[in-house]
Amino acid sequence: MELIHAIKELREAMQQAVAAGKTVGLVPTMGALHAGHASLVARSVRENDVTVVSVFVNPTQFNDKEDLAKYPRTLEADCALLESLGATVVFAPSVEEIYPVPDTRVFSFAPLDTVMEGKYRPGHFNGVAQIVSKLFEMVAPDRAYFGEKDFQQLAIIRALVEQQGYAVDIVGCPIVREEDGLALSSRNARLSAEERERALNISKTLFASREFAKGHSVAETAAFVEQSIAGAEGLRLEYFEIVDGNTLQPVAAWDDSDFVVGCITVFCGDVRLIDNIKYKEPGKQL
Ligand code: PAF
Image 1 (tube, rainbow, N blue to C red):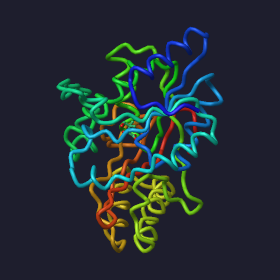
Image 2: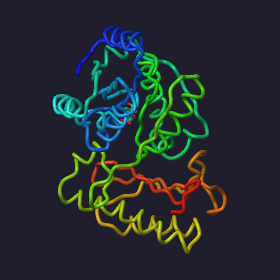
Image 3: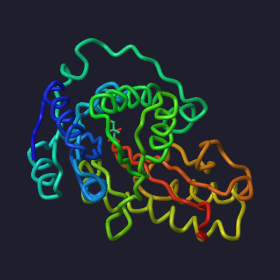
Image 4: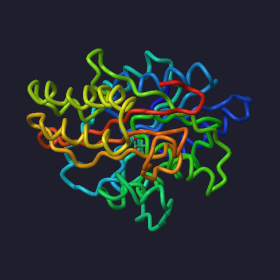
């Protein structure tokens, strides 16, 4: 496995891979890797000759400076994990390497980016599009792997690919959860033992809501989730939306779409956690 910090070196490695007729998988990450990332990397290693994992805490997607400062950075441990998974290249550039001059590009994915995270984290998806488009241009991967935990991000990346005409297949990978249900996130590392226990109520509520939804309306199910989080100690709901899984717009009735997802963001102490649950999925009885 090669650890690369410079774009020039990355481009050379990619040119060699293409010249040798190798397929390339890209797993963009911000590091602090956990089993969720590992599942993306393992899948890329299975499906491609070369797997590039980028490790870069992208400042342009943080609208909260404190969140950026507190984001865990664990490159050494990340590299050890990636080596054990069979990654070919780790690309860990500096901020100056990626943004030698400010990136002034403005993307719009409306209406996908005007709701949920887009509403509560203005500019977040513009920053995601800036870094992901740069990575797609540098690596020119055949496939790129993203987790479904960031459900809205995945929809926006697909829209980015369509808008920009990138020749890359976007592979969405299922949420990885701890045995007790907590969705894996790099931010979980910031939870105290007590907060972690409290955070469990997020996934518990979502799972319970899937049962509840079988006999209740969309509005009743949303109220069930909101009340359950409001009643859980130490949690503060930012939003819960039941949306069409493709357009990300709220649905009023279960029959409005064959793909219906509940997306939630909750503060546990000062740690912002997101999760989601599928109520309906095309071709699947949930
Ligand atoms: O999902 C993430 O970790 C980040 O948003 C991504 C896609 C690596 C871009 O910085």
